[in-house]
Length: 434
Image: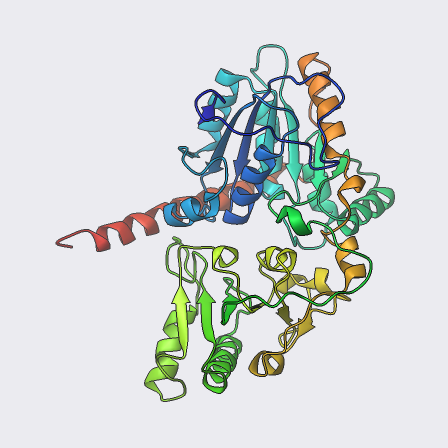
């Protein structure tokens, strides 16, 4: 759970802000990261690997809930990270609190949804022997527009890590308008390939990789309508038929693959079988893959999605992309960050295999800024000083508590219970002799 470096040696982690070690002498820290979704698990593992200095004792846990990744997806998400071969427990809130009280980490990375952060922060500040750990949260890549409610929730932590100038400006603007302030730091997404974590300010042709593969990264609920999902599959099928030299892969997430307790209402595999049975597509047109994040598939010739965060890794690897705008651009589709990128396209572009690289100017503002702009390592280091000195006060208050907050908590606990029941039923169904 929390592992000492002597048990799992790792190379010295350098601060992602500047690529150099902090000026102060290195000190060993104990850091625990908590995540509640697959995307945040990957972010947490990468952030643990990027903590400045060396010799740290680090651990990763998943918070029990309806969106916790299934075991296969968890293993796939952690592949090629320092956490790959370590036990990652799934904890309830009470077990997480007990762990923090027992191990007394210097910092806890609360990489969870805003509601979960608001719940957990007060629990983790008590019963820790007179001092509390530094509480840090981070915005997940391609998050929806930051709202006042989210900012208030994350104000219960000591530091909010964002990964783009766009997010940094949004938080500053919201704080100025609402009076809700939280310490904010900028960090480069730590799991992007180091060769392309920033973009030059002049366009350059994307590198065409060798594999003749097109990858579509599917997402639960995006798009939501059955007809829209069928349009996606039909366009991919038409591309495969027009270009027999290409392998067209549909990379499924947990819900699409039926590995979550709350599955997708219209999963792509089921829709595909119906299209084939009705003669609207060929059975061999598409290849479906599950259990492996889309970004971990062999480097493709083109990458298609509506708004999957894995597209950022494709961009960093110089893979041409298309962000589908046929279903609109909005918060419900989680694709507003791509406005002005030059990477939005249509299913017609997919059929014609027209992929593109995003604008360098957009990229610098959105996740691909120069590493010299980052300041999270310095701010994190200063925060640890305050935590070890017992100088951290109570976590900030969050408005909107009381009955409404209790109702949301009750509903979340019910969803968690239903998810557990769904997974148990699926496991019993797969058991021999069932």
